[in-house]
Length: 258
Image (tube, rainbow, N blue to C red; front, side, top):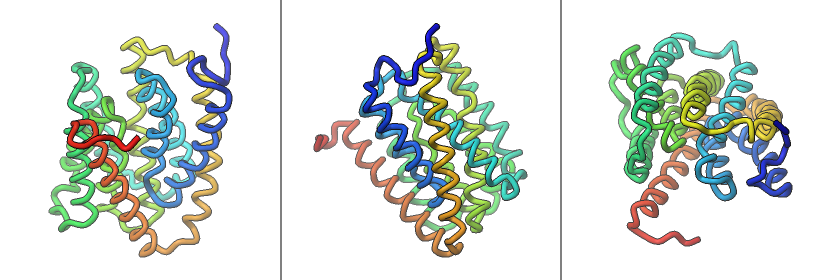
């Protein structure tokens, strides 16, 4: 088996462009709290084969979030993660068992509306952030993640409701997403996806992403919590509005401008 940096499906120029994008999008997530993963997914969808988008993006995000988790280790809320982890197992297990083509526009619409509610609507009752609430949120988003790969904004908005301190938000979000992306290797591997064809490219994307995370955390240190919360909400709102637009295109409610 021959390992190459550039998979057959990509040209060298596109591969180098995506490596640079990995640095930029990781920097966005580390400094602003969210947004980089979805932006990278959109960019990758322009060039990767449809069958490779979700599994390859999932492995890149696994590495990027793991790097961010390591760099922000002391800020992680382990009580939230302890409740989140069992939900990942349950949601991914159900998703792997079903592994069906679900109506993508419905998930996009639901995620976008709930993100907008979490950012600008009244606060959820405190019971929603207990062990059961976190478990249910984890299970649902882990299930959806196997099919649409765009649950980062929803998880970020949920964790934002728990934490107001910027480093705790970023660290706990990174750890939660590391757990959520981890089962994808097993699920898509058993489904027949050949990760070996993309291995070197994935590792390179993770390395470039780690550099972006390091830069982004330096930017984060210069922010106050109030400024971070405002930028975080605006970023999530922009992502939610894009999902609403994409849901309309997917469902055929309006035509794509591209």
